[in-house]
Amino acid sequence: MTQWSGYFGLILQGALVTIELTLMGSVLALIMAFLAGMGRLSRFLIVRAIATAYIEFFRGTSIFVQLFFAYFVLPLVGLELTPLQAGVLALGLNVGAYAAEVVRGAVQSIGREQHEACIALNLGRWQGMRHVILPQAFLVMLPTFGNNAIELLKATSVVSLISLADLTFQAQVVRAQTGNTMVPFTTILVIYFILALLISWGVRSLERRLARGLDGVRV
Image (cartoon, rainbow, N blue to C red; front, side):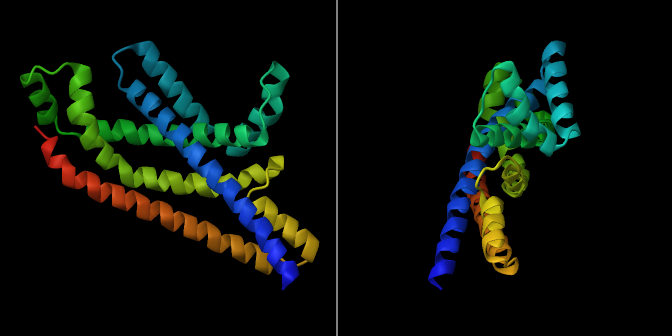
């Protein structure tokens, strides 16, 4: 029993790394989603082209290749990354590309009357977007953002391939040392599920709070 408590301690250490990856990767993904999503709506062709290129590239290539590129290739051009930094970069850029289309679609889903009301109130393009359109669009984005965050959580398992001691890596260590496959992998299965439930709960709670305050935003 004492031996297994030590092994469970290893898995819990891996859970902390997975949570760290998920939080930092989600922040980067959110930033890239808004930059690229709003870039797709820009009036400037060059901005739209750059945003589209980013989205299509990271949606069209494998997360495994992106991770290996960040960790093994970037050092060849002088950009040395730790396994954690490489994992956050690959996960954030990959999920951010998918979330960017969520941002674009949500902004475009806001009724034309809201845009016309901004003009009637003499709000500039940025003012109308910031104070009227984006608050309403963000509520539309939230459910899919939650799905994206859960996908990012599950994708963190790929970092075990570059020897980052996340949940999956630690489960493999325990399996190798004990010869038992069922216990460590059942344990991390449950932990992944609990973390996904926490993300879902957090997103739903935020969605309810924003919905209550949205009536004051519509014009």
